[in-house]
View 1 (tube, rainbow, N blue to C red):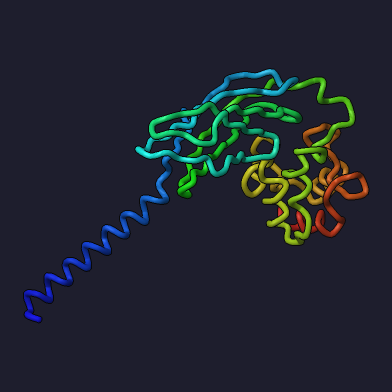
View 2 (view 1 turned 135 degrees about the horizontal axis):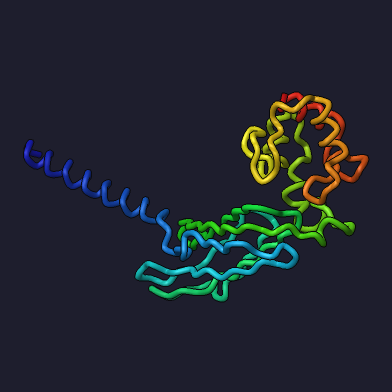
Length: 229
């Protein structure tokens, strides 16, 4: 083979590899897009389920399937009216949020995964008026769907940081610096231990100790307190 022929062969191979890489990367690009990317519901009543409707659009030139719908927490239910979308088509995505024990600004994320592996997400922002009815009754964060976020994730964890991320961070913010719920970092060890063990007397902060119906053992509570301090 001549030198010129060799270089031509190399160029052809490189071009083929580039096209293959582009085709491979395009498979991860989402073809189903949630519209709008952010929906602000304003102030809502916290005494009943909160409903919203988004659109899922197929922005490709081929049919596409909804492979998976997911939300950032167990209190958010998702239902698409159609799972198969024609090229350029769309369907409604119905969202129902349970506002139990929530107040103030709340942000939920919903995600759709298409049949090609691409993902698209959107945020739903709302401000929940305090639900006085939720302050009474026997319901807690450890019941039903709420348990998926506030009870179950603590199982088998022993390190304070891992425990905090599993059952505390969603309310008290990253590293205990505050979020929907007050800041924990910097509080006296005795205050932290008592609050985690016995709760704050509200549905939003029940007793987390196992002897009171919560998910945490004494050793887990000690690990949390040690990490926060």
